[in-house]
Length: 133
Image (cartoon, rainbow, N blue to C red):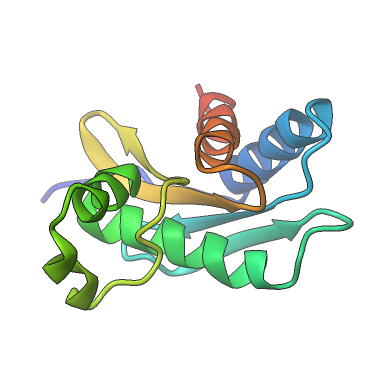
């Protein structure tokens, strides 16, 4: 029988707290979402002033990163480089800002952030993930 790491409540809260600190340090109003490896939402935090739609977008970015095992930046780049057929893929959240959580070489979840520029969303997501280590 195989075993796998999972994101428990302590890890989800650590990610959310660290992402919030990173965003607040930069005066960014964002929403951060954390999912398990199947893309199901484990936690979401919308900072004061973040647009309501950032809640949906951050969750979609996290889900896409979890299911694909890739940063969502890969998909945004693919589309921007002309592979527009990928827009018909059955995924939402194809914009930069979704990052898989990898432990021992296995994806155990993902973090998605929405609210600022694409690279800033990714920066916040990666700051959240770094807090688990």
